[in-house]
Length: 192
Ligand SMILES: [Zn+2]
Image (cartoon, rainbow, N blue to C red):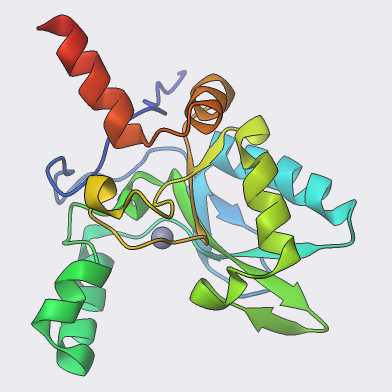
């Protein structure tokens, strides 16, 4: 049976997923960063193609985090609240059901240099991530929380978080400097 996946699904602070939503075509991801990562099948195929292209520049990028269940997100949130307080946690971590990672279409990646992993904010100035994020749309990925769009996405800039939406939509968003949220807003406005 062919599984229909809505690659353009909008998940943000207003649009969430049910607690029992689990993507049906998750596959195992090979990553030097860690084991037990899963992604939606096409998302993973396209990630491998992107990774391959980037490796042509002798850059190494690896998946750091892929699919996360509702329960996993719930635990992360509780941990960050304990560590850094509720105010910080609410800005930095998605509520359970409101994380794109639950779709299997989002991934966090890291840069690997001389057997050292560079993660999260530290990848921002890396030539590896600058290059990756400049060509990601050709493989169907968008930088979901770009710099300068914080008030629209509701999230701080995350150069490491890529979301698979398919090549056509990713290219459209990249060329027009739009977020997925803005794309949906425009579609709504056109209807009314
Ligand atoms: Zn992420």
